[in-house]
Length: 454
Length: 122
Image (cartoon, rainbow over all chains, first blue to last red; front, side, top):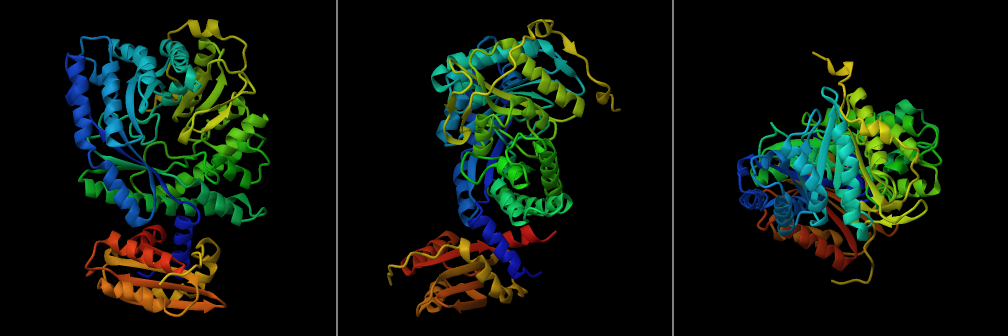
């Protein structure tokens, strides 16, 4: 089979001129076998297992990236939700486990370790509630640990007791890390319909049935897609634009899968999935919002934004699905406000509002992500935001999530910078009318008819 | 041999590479895993071809096909090379080519052929 000159050029262009990269390789480590009654011993066993299994992750990924000329930006580990691992512990304090996981992450040289998590979509177990109440301290005392809580699914409904609790937990985590603008909240995701094989942070955890030690890949490439859209000009009809996006997504996914499989083979572990998500970074040219504006929107957040994003999200999924039979994770377009320089700018300009972001979450793969709100936003309002996102996910049978940061002491007009991949963004206005009575009712929003699919 | 020229950036010269890369696309027989594509761009001067092929010959790499053009001052070349029998690790060859490129004011890109196949075949 021959490769044409055009294909050579296109590939070299994507890799060397358009910054095609693989956003993450993430190894899943099952920690069920570390369970026990003594939390200190459990923590130690978790540390030792993660260290043992991921020992070669970073050097192997760097070798493969060098060889194939495609950078692998992050190396990460996701673990079994700690609420399951710690369930037999006599102690009601799981922070020692958090500390040991964080230590393993630092010693391995990985940038995040995800899985300080609980799945409580129908009801909380004692261990689930314990884990949740430990989250603020666990995040405040660590730098690389990520946490997530699943509070609803299409089949279970929405656990409104957990939703109410999570509003308070977010506030507590923000207050404990006020000096970093509430930075702990950037490592906490509240999900509806969480996926169990997500390689991206902060929502990664290794679900049940996912095996042990498998390697997943999260691709990226907003710059590549934007370049393609821009090259198509302003007049091409949307069907043809979608087709071109689909083709590029195919190529990006193939490159990602090749590199991911090489990494897995060299590590001697199974290849798990490839997550075909367009994930932006704050770097110039790496913005998903830029793609939407290249499609013909003056400023992201204006009318047409939701439609454009729906088209983009679907085109990416189609191309990716053709490229691989191992698609998984979130697989779509991400819209984290502080991590996308253009998104952040449009929010600061007032062109992009939280209400518009909420609409956008109905058609793309994550939810209200890296949204900074005023420090005096109440816990009940945060819970209302979570409940709204969960409802969108539950009814539409998709994953939605909330990663929101109530920056202590900050008001609309302020800017908070988290640095690195977390970027920075403006404090966005939130509707301050109260939903406290609604939230305090608690209980469960029952599973919708969409859940009765048998 | 050192030169004061700065390496020519790849980005602006993709079209020129395309004009002649056609020639390297018809190759058979050798397993894809051991084949690499090398692209060279830079200001033309005597000895580039000899220099690059010299680096490859030294490690026992087998050049399967070459296509090159000089337009005005700009030299561009794409090669398909089999590295099955090379006497050094892949990373050493890559480093050697990149070092030669830096010393000569050239951009030299080395890429596994596998990537091209994976991205462009359904």
